[in-house]
Length: 381
Image (tube, rainbow, N blue to C red; front, side, top):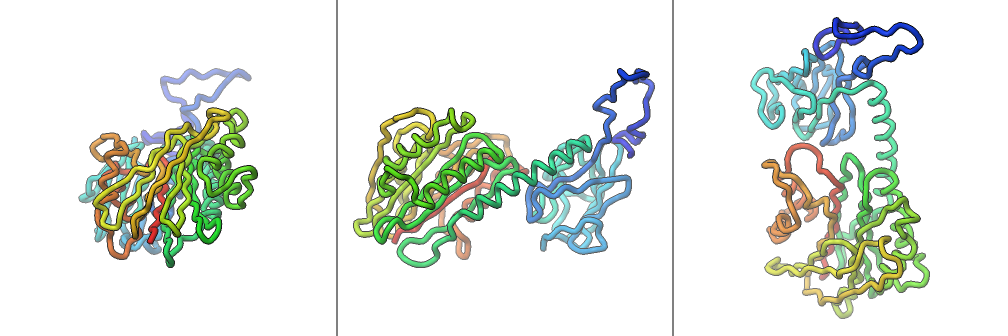
């Protein structure tokens, strides 16, 4: 195929030394290179679009060679063409515009290796890799997608009516972290909810999260009262020591709400606080107990806490992927940067986790978030 400099990648140029005989080796730089766009955000996240010698048009409908499911795209939105050391992007008179690295394209603009193309709700990254790397990536992506779908299948449906209502959002990162959460009634007067975040990324981290979820969902934590958060943490700590789990550990927050007296018993293990807000959002209570992460210290005496929930109070439970972002100005956020967003007004017709995601995404730099975005919100009437 034609290489990035417009020459045949299989040709030996003047600077190459040819070794004849069985000791000959093909330099990695001479491997069959693939130019491609990978969708990092949008409805078709993870899709790989291979580029060749012919220009490729992208839009909402045929006859475009690449059709994306996106109502914000024009029928024929833009065209991409390999050219020397990169790609040329041409806007085809689209309604909502074509953007290269955040700048709107007026006519044609270059897209360098590692750059981003934004069209509608889709963000695509341009990369060049050896073909074998692409195949390995596709296989890896398939395994991550399977793990991600399995975790999604275990998540409880939101509760939309009654004195306890829940809503949540889980958006796996491109690397797939080990985030998971859940909630369930233990009996008529005890409602449990939790969130965990496994160290590391990939299918192995996801499977550890699944193991913990199954123990809690099936109520098979023998020897611990599921209504007592400190006991739950201690039992999980004994079951999931890191030396038996490929050195992986996880942070954890677990709480049990009693509607009869409006008390919330809770305990956290290496996790940042959950936050309890009254209906008017004028105050904020951090809920955290200072315990180590699960799996690090055997036989640790975990401690819990208790708080009274105000009428129509709302509990926010989330992973660090929600706030550990890099902004468009290349500043790394911490928890304190995110917390003011909790006190902003609700948005009509939008779930609270989605409102917060959009607020975070608006200040984050372009591209996918670095870690899983996981948020569970419970309204306790």
